[in-house]
Image 1 (tube, rainbow, N blue to C red):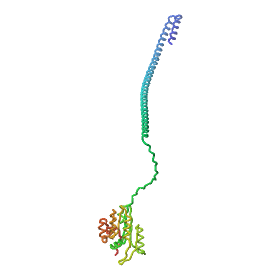
Image 2 (cartoon, helix red, strand yellow):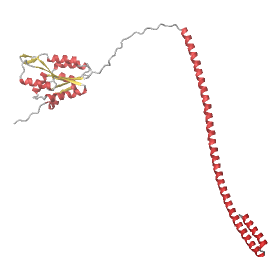
Image 3 (cartoon, one colour):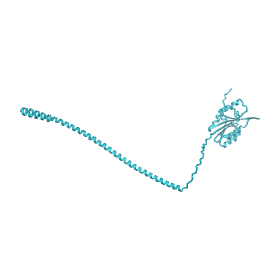
Image 4 (cartoon, rainbow, N blue to C red):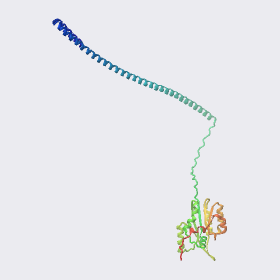
Length: 320
């Protein structure tokens, strides 16, 4: 553009010299000065643009340099990590080779040991005479049951004839259920109990006797009856005392207990026999008519009937 202005100015200048003279020369000079000023302004603007472009290029270059430096740092870090991993891999490979070598050495040693043992066993077999195997004898297998603990029993035996006389003497009307409860109370020390009532009965029973026997059986009394024989002083039961003694001797086992309801001295040999077998024996009888030797034999094991009379009698209403 500046070149164009110069060319125009030169053409005007030449034209002025040729045709117009001095006036034209002044006009041409003024135009040339104006063109020169305009050219300078344009040049300044171009320099500013160039400077701006250069500064922008420098900024971009610096940014790129920083990015490249950052990438170089990251590359160095990755390279360091890679070298570290490679070193660990080499260490693992070395340890693996050492372990394989040690395993092979142990296996070889085991083979040598096994071969030595086999050789020694063969030598031992040659030195030891061979014995013929003894045929196995088939035996019958038997299952032997374990012994079971026997239940301990309290044997409660009532001498019916003696007990009836005692209650008549003491004027007691017996509550048979209450009597059973009072007699069974000491039986709690054993696993179970038996309750037997020995008495003599006529062949033909009265309605009251039948009702009484039925009542006893409902209360789980085991009633054992015997025949009666008439004597000069009244009726006598035949065999009741002997039956009680035989039943007790046969039934009582170690660990059992015996409760005899009687005051008859005829039972002294039986009590002594039971005590010799380490059997606990209690006798329940009225103090007033129980044999004194029987009471002395039992001592604290004698239970006076008077001490439990309030528990075993029926309550009566007072009448005017």
